[in-house]
Image (tube, rainbow, N blue to C red):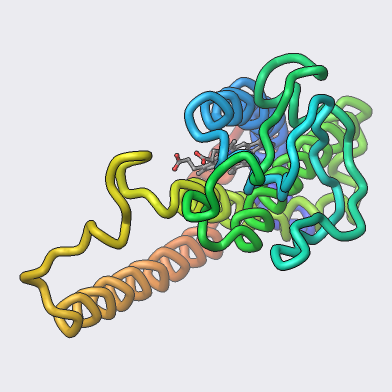
Length: 251
Ligand code: HEM
């Protein structure tokens, strides 16, 4: 909002305040998401769901100094990662705390325990960490520019900050997809298969009807959210502070 108001040249005092608070909190929050929270999640997956970790990274064979692929596409049929460019040791470190740690590969687990959609799991995980890394970089640049007193005049950066707003929602959804796809084929890990977890007294029709109902409800709530947020942004802050007028407040 601060970037939007600055680009439009309106509500300048509030815009400066929003930019200052937003970039400061954004930097702290984006670092916390990667470390310690993301890091701890990875360690938990490594400890309790080693087959999920192997699938998240498209690791078909185990090894130490296991890397995180910056680029690469898993080829399930050929049991390999195509065109990989890896950060060596990063997965070993992320999951077990040292670069030399051994990360087990998918070939060390029976195939019926592999997550069923390894490609989607792999891409969800990688897009999430790519977005997380980009958020940190963006917030570092924004804070650096703010420190130099150049944030308000960096038009390109204000555009990037403004257009970045949907991406944390996307990263959240990718994180949820990573967790949900990663725990397949289990409903209760190692004990209870998803395929055994449906109710025999609820018909397919009832399930689809309920799903459509919830999808519709969330769609309407989403539209309402966008409408109300847009209306508040267009309305602007209530008490306009006029800079240079001795903090005078215009109602
Ligand atoms: C920057 C580096 C990041 C790392 C290393 C990381 C790592 C992870 C890991 C390992 C998982 C666990 C998946 C599982 O339980 O199977 C996870 C889940 C998740 N992540 Fe990330 N993540 C990062 C960035 C982000 C960002 C930027 C967001 C959102 C803004 C995000 C949101 C989530 C969510 C919502 C979950 C699902 C939690 C759950 O349902 O249990 N992550 N992340």
